[in-house]
Length: 147
Image (cartoon, rainbow, N blue to C red; front, side, top):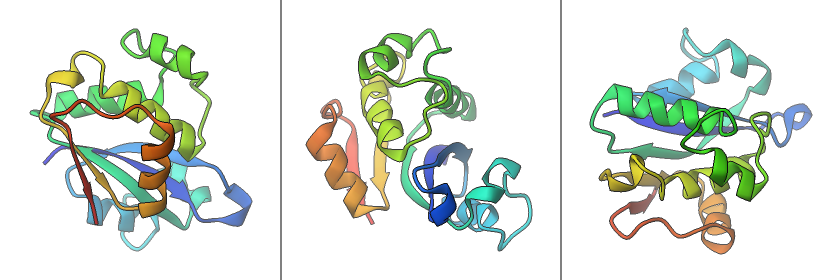
């Protein structure tokens, strides 16, 4: 299992902030981010508590997943994602969960990811509903799951 995920802060002082990461174990990773286990990312300490909104998995290697993560984190720097980020008016510094979700849904149409057997697993029903209303639909072979 190689996945990329989106966290959103539940801290009222950090409302509207998010974090994109890579994991091989989403349940363990969210516990690390929230401080229940050691080895959480330092960047998310101020975001605590946070919730995992969505996990994208089905990458064939850790390298593919890490490349996706980097492009999702750095959309204007990534040559593969720059045009989509520009069209969606999303900068490298944009950290709103809504913008990160719009970018994710756009990235699923880009090479090399558009040909992968990816699954978008929604952990937040409200964010899935928002994506279905406001974002591009994923390619037909991409699975959408909830729960």
